[in-house]
Length: 174
Image (spheres, rainbow, N blue to C red):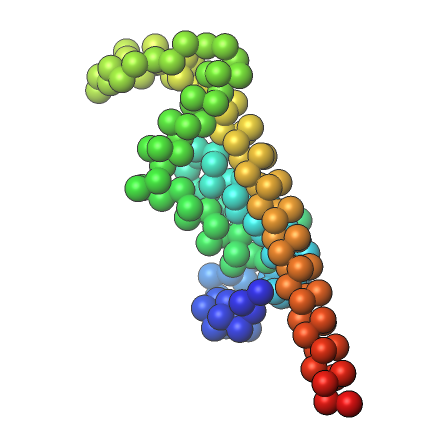
């Protein structure tokens, strides 16, 4: 895995701990797994970050950070992965989530007929919201578990390859 690249990109944990605005968190930021780049911390970070990027809520990064701390996984990776759903990717992602939710719940898709009025919003919030959030949870769980599994698989594969290469190098030197 690109550990050296990630270590250069991510902020130094000691500098984060010295930020006075974060002192209310106490010793929470001193947990080593929040900053370490190892297979388990990174895989769980993908689980958290990918899941929350599919859920259409405000302050996704804050929620991902809370869950990263709770699950003891890499905090910067969890928060960074939430930005997969950014202003450019949100419309197709959330429409896909809505489509999945409507298909599973056997609801008809609503055509694009947006009106900027409280009446339209109050009428459509339940009709669109339930399939959207149901599909978001389904997609979030599916893609998060898939990414978790892929990170575990490829990390183990890379470690085995490195180990095999070191063995080959030792044999050729002997």
